[in-house]
Length: 270
Image (cartoon, rainbow, N blue to C red):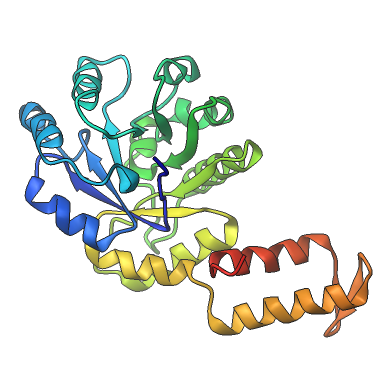
């Protein structure tokens, strides 16, 4: 089974099976959530729904409760009765615990202070395919009240955590997933944050509402003029035959050419 990550990952509460198909139709991949989106009293029913309403395992992630808890043990028992093999581990902190989940592709969700500090070790677990960070749980783990300032921008600690997880993922060749944007009506703010995620190196952005999917996809899709500029730059590099050359008044070297190739990859042209 080949899992298709895609740019827009949509959370769906696992206790709402009537939303499964709709979420799958709208997003690149669906995260069926057994953790925070489900009240404790509803978790047993959510696991039954997970088993009884199975979706495409190539486009479905299951978020389980923190490892080492009775809830996680029950989640994993339910998972064994499904074909799902891509698992998001909530509040991941222990690389050894992740290593014990044999047979699954794992997304380590770094959303506590310890989880962010452990991100480099989590990224080195062989079956970890991606790292994601979470802003609100992180700030809560520190005793704070909000990850964002009054102007909507992240507080310094959240910026640090976001960058740390991105760097850990990149250092070990894993995909980095950006956190959800919780202000659902603010599509302009989501668009700006998603564009920054793309420019910074994130491979996907998670979301909590179907209306956010198109905005994220648009941010991850290079504009036609950017594709044309990348193609022209790479053609000029091939014609120059030099490692470093001048192009339109700018010095061009290897890293700049990598940026151009990445633009073409996101456009599906490489």
